Length: 224
Ligand code: MG
Ligand code: ZN
Image (cartoon, rainbow, N blue to C red; front, side, top):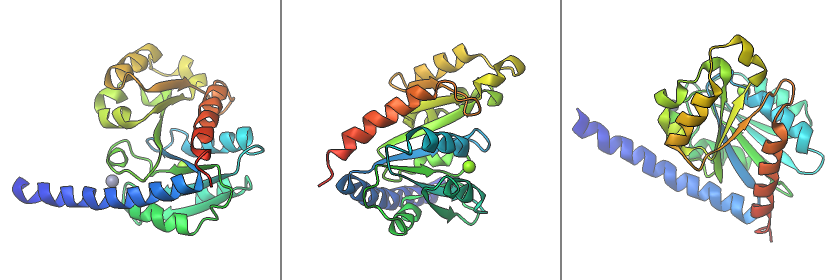
């Protein structure tokens, strides 16, 4: 069975790589910094986006691609903030792929856009395997999920440039050792930047905004 399965999986990933490259070319030529935002369900992706729009929306033009298995609830939350949001309903699929994002890009007005955040489907497994053309993968882990997640989902940690540890306001009430997260994530990906934040209260978000601003500036110089 594995003799059949392996080439098929490779073909899917290769086809995805080509589409991801096409997306990346679009982002680079337009000078748009693109982030692939991943986490398990409920870790705070949409809340982080709302806060980020509050924090940077007056200085940067932001758009969001919302990946969800069903419903447009999150896209509506984002639109209420006054930024462009395109919904991708994956129709049951548990991750976004390059082709879905390419379609969503075509529905966006890219003119003058500084930052595009692609909110992936809530899942710590296969989203890490599918490049979307983003400049960086960013993941959120909430402290309510515990400190063992780097051990269980190493690829997500290995591929993400940034780890946002969210809901730190809940630390007194949950069984989670921040030092263990830092240690375990650091072993998997020594270059990963870790920001400890609370999207509810806003703690720690300045470091995240500063990281975004640096990356936005780096990509924006390409704009013709
Ligand atoms: Mg969401
Ligand atoms: Zn999947």
